[in-house]
Image 1 (cartoon, rainbow, N blue to C red):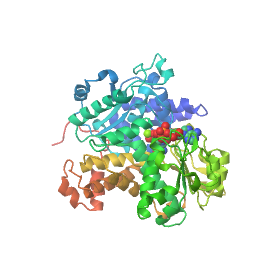
Image 2: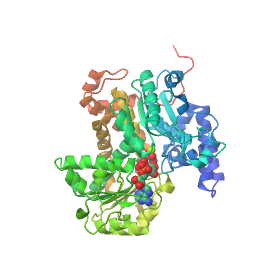
Image 3: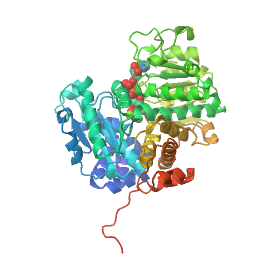
Length: 528
Ligand SMILES: NC(=O)C1=CN([C@@H]2O[C@H](COP(=O)(O)OP(=O)(O)OC[C@H]3O[C@@H](n4cnc5c(N)ncnc54)[C@H](O)[C@@H]3O)[C@@H](O)[C@H]2O)C=CC1
Ligand SMILES: CC(=O)C(=O)O
Ligand SMILES: [Mg+2]
């Protein structure tokens, strides 16, 4: 910590990229040298270190990974390993693996295709699993599926560590993922595989293909959706309205990719439950935009995943196919404007000023894209242009904003880190062999009800990252209980299905907390 603090002191005024990469190097060296100590300082200083090992710095690390590379971490399965993956999996030295984060590097944060350099994301996500969920670091496995890259710059970079070929497509691609999933399942049938940062077409396709066969989920589609839903429900409470008023909120989502569509799907499921299974009414309140603007039924070559949300032009009077975010906000006066576009600055001054006319007393702006440069707007601009009354959330951290007269504009970190560790931990301890919508919904509801009314009134929708272990234990327990209710909990370790079934809510939280690993040195000689 002394060397970290002196680095901070000695690099004041230097560019963000230089300072944050230097910080990452200090932590990475410690990670290689002394795992127990690394996780201990990570847990004790999570607020300072999450932005280094996770977003935003992890983005910069991935962009520069081939140059930063010193030692391997995790496993790489390449297209050339076809037919060998089963023996490769059996070569992994740990007896047991509980949690795998898998990527193919095709959509790393909002930074696009980074090929094998995307391995930084599974490493960072699994560090959060250890820090937040107390998964034993000996039982985690970051995995890169190297199926090539379409990033020309990387293909020409002499330092690039991956296969120098264009990405595999179609059946060739799927056969690689299939082989990997079968191999993992054979050796560790209960290991949970988190799919992370896959480009949209494969994100949806693999989720559909595997979710009923393997214990897996897609964090960008499902984890993000739960965090966003908790945020949306929070904004209803912040307006002093009962949760049932959620059905009256107008929601504009900018970005129709895996994350944006995941959010809309989950929000619409929740809305239709609240409005007596009236899915039509729920959909009417949600508007979706992509790089070509408002998606309507007039759209040519509409993506099948976005089609269910396309608006009939007669239902959006005064708006046209492809209307810009500004036109949409100006016309609709939405309660919530949520960005998952991956494009920095899409919520510009004009769009943010239009949010001043929102029908909500506390309009919500979520600029959820990562890393910081890709956020749809900064926190300072949001409060400056949309007004001091807004609720603000961003995917990467921003400082709270000084609004003058002692008032503070609170910044929420609307990031799936509040859910994925609990989803993984709860599933693991339940012993369920699949992850259902019910388990994910329980996770979202747990996060949504975690904050007090007073905090919510002050614009605070999510807990501080300092309490991430606590919220993760609660989320984990909620997921475990949902698995029990669905008769999926087969038990794990000391607790069989009967024990799990008979645990009260409080006992489940205590059970989950008890099973979280904490970094202490193990004695070399056991005392008698
Ligand atoms: N805060 C969080 O927890 C999470 C944040 N994200 C972020 O969300 C972003 C998007 O991720 P995915 O949905 O997986 O990407 P994606 O590539 O599947 O989708 C991006 C979408 O944005 C649209 N888009 C592009 N330019 C646009 C523009 N100028 N205006 C409006 N829409 C535009 C595209 O048409 C596409 O529909 C990334 O930056 C990622 O870091 C993703 C998951 C979780
Ligand atoms: C947070 C996250 O999963 C993403 O930006 O992709
Ligand atoms: Mg992601």
